[in-house]
Image (cartoon, rainbow, N blue to C red):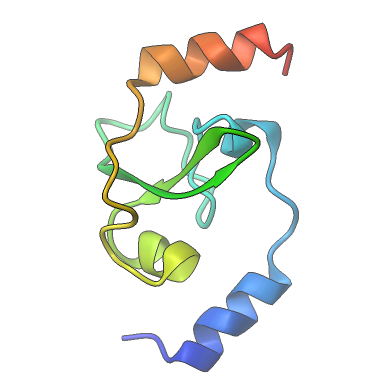
Length: 90
């Protein structure tokens, strides 16, 4: 299990999220591209500019939100996230 200090340190050392991360197409922590990953279990961990920010269920979600299950909200379907990403011109 990660200590609170290591989780906080990881958050401070993280680079700015990419356009794919902001569109819910990649994990905020490990960068897994959900378009290419074989059915990863994703969870909503935050919101930014009315978009869901996602992380992989488990350690990534805990590091992003403090909970392995993220927020109690289902992520939008991948096809919808891809459509919105393209519409934003990202």
